[in-house]
Amino acid sequence: MATKTFINKAFKTLMHPSLILHFTLGKLAPYISNDRTYIRMKYRLNLKRKCDLDTPKIFQEKLQWIKLNDRKPIYHQMVDKIEAKKFIADKIGEEYVIPMLGMWERFEDIDFDALPDRFILKCSFDSGSYYICKDKSKLNKKEIKKHLLVNWKHDYYCYSREWPYKGLKHRILAEPLIADPKELKEYKFFCFNGIPKFYQSCLDRNNAIGGAILNFFDLQGNLLEVKDAEHSRESLEIAPIPTNLNKMIELSRVLSNETYFLRVDFYEVNGQIYVGEFTFFENGGFCYFIPEKYNSIWGDWIKLPID
Image 1 (cartoon, rainbow, N blue to C red):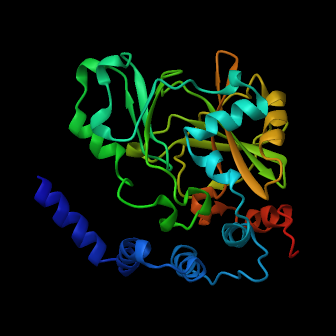
Image 2 (cartoon, helix red, strand yellow):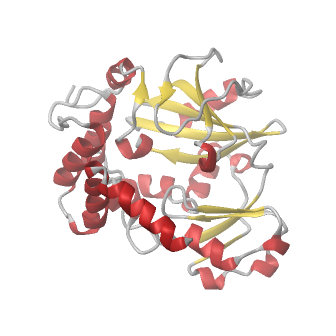
């Protein structure tokens, strides 16, 4: 079965030249040292147009400019899932921090016996490497390791040149499950030069059936027409307006201060707000939203020193 799956994937790749180019660039990424060159190559491959890094205008281009030109050391702390907890506590208070159950530098050092029946494991240095355990009696450590350590061998920054991730220490952390994953409501606030402009709701994250249920809202909770063209699945389900909407707006403003663009993610559980993570570059800076006009609108909202 595994051989058949591999053959099917290989055949699909060979039938689509762009997939071969994506695969090749991904393999070469750790060995291409010039960030500017790599960004231009990946941008052209992903978005099918040239990237203007000298006079950027649209949202996608400005994110690339920020990668190359805005490199404050504090950004390392903000994207490291362990160090970010201190940043959040110092900025807005410990009550907004998801507690940590443990931290390890090697998978083999994880003390599963000391963990509760339900927990989540995350890599501290990248985005998207996690494993949710709902029942410890059914643990398959080999399967967990496979899911968790996808990016362990390389510096995560190299694949999209997101500088905040460069050189981060590779660690694993455990957190309690603050809610059942199917019931968890996440609200992502898009902040431009420290000003939150709108938010995105995220429900039922499930890549096996086409991604999460994503919708965009203005700061009054009105549904917007914009859609994430790559990561959202169609659904009639709409997330409720967060109980603490005004508080989330206020916290987003504080946390995104002195950034050109930052997405601040919150969870709301039984009326309690927790900060999830910070994202400097939506989908690595190669995001695609529809209608296309928002690429220009959001680009205008980011004010750079060169504008």
